[in-house]
Figure 1 (spheres, rainbow, N blue to C red):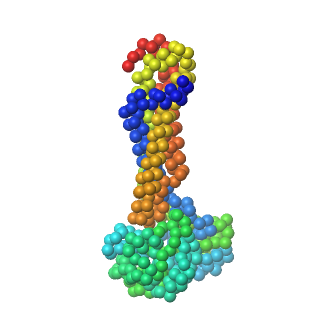
Figure 2 (cartoon, one colour):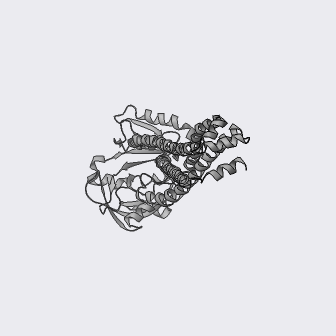
Figure 3 (cartoon, rainbow, N blue to C red):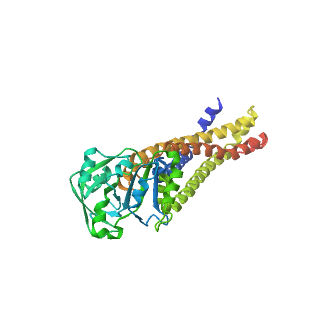
Length: 389
């Protein structure tokens, strides 16, 4: 009988305890994977940000606006391939079919040129350019709001009063998995020309610039800010990744809390495994004495104990991976993307998270067995043979 066979046969000598331990480890892996998936999904959009785009906003705050004429100054700078702009609309559905979705008033001439990960058919672009109240929606939002191209859509805003009527001219295609499919883009001039938008008359929220050379982004950012340094409204320009992360500033404390909770889950997993292995070792002290008496060495005893702990942890980890794939990737992910696409455009457990959770289970299984195994290996044969639990 080799050491692996011995460890395997010992697994289910206390069937109930072993099964409960495997279930506990599986649930810990599932919860850990779920928490890390939330964090990864929050940061996915920023991590996938284009390297050849930079963003410009008001120096003081994202909620402060810039004069629209700034866009022409940016476009004239060397190294700028294209630039577009947008304003936040603060939309909500009066029929309450969805609690929240992102809507932007954007330049209809350049938005989809700069934001080329949002795929739009040429015919849709042409109609958008000739329809003052035209809007382009993501497919998930269109499904939620029960509209299709050609339909009339009425929404409200947290910023601007009254009902706002749009014509749905098309659906954009998400060409990257991190693109929010639960948002809406409409023409900036429609908002600018409406008296209800007077507080933002000839103002823009931010500028997105596509540049010729990504490696020159830092230098070009400084040139853009220097252009407006002596004006009343100064700017700060940053990478698109930094710009997107700035939107997550309000969630920074939540993400830090998730990091702490992740550590607590790992600690709980370690305690579950340590308790099971310590109890099993205590019950089998006499058996280890017999093994030593017939010629097995201390390192053999250590291998038996560590091997059993790792097998339990591995079984629980694999069960947790299956639960993660079924519950998070198969059930929760699509539902979250459909209902919370503005925050989680892509909600799936990354392979890195799943691998980390499984690795953590195996490592913790090893660590949990070290002290019990060390103590068992140091027992005198005569003392171990006297122990009968």
